Amino acid sequence: MPPTYPFERRLGAIPAGDGLAGFRVWAPRPDAVRLRVYGHEHALAHAGHGILEATVEAGPAADYAYVIDGQPLPDPAARWQPEGLRGPSRVLDPAAFAWTDDGFRTPDLRDVVLYELHVGTFTPEGTFDAAIGHLRGLRDLRPSKVKRRTRARRPGGACRRAHRGLGDGEGPAR
View 1 (cartoon, rainbow, N blue to C red):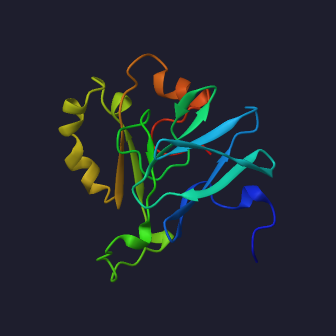
View 2 (cartoon, rainbow, N blue to C red):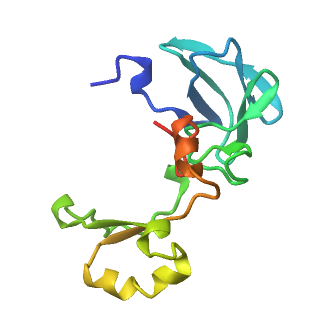
View 3 (spheres, rainbow, N blue to C red):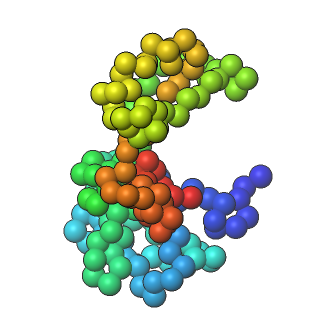
């Protein structure tokens, strides 16, 4: 069943073929948001429920930004940020990638064991160097994936950023 509401469709940059890409962003508060691609700014149309969208000339690997009050900002739903979190976003076309993992099958959820290692609380020293000495014991738990969480650069840093709605740099805050 096709999406009924604008917020049910994917946000970000979506290649549309023939050198075009669709851009969708949720921005319910700003009066004017423009899209900057190839140095040109484009108006975005209101799709409802705070969603703004446009389809413009922009091929794969085109850099773009949303412009609010004259300030270019990265796409919070971008799939590619080649210059980091504050730089321009870039259109990514996953269909253009030469995939080589045809034989990969996602493990069944009941076979997955995730371990999130918080470096700051994993050892009394709270450092990665101190954690290294304990990794053999962690291996004995046989997790299928270990996610390393770094210490905040300042007290409450990572949590404070996420609480303000800015995310933690690991993907769009949704």
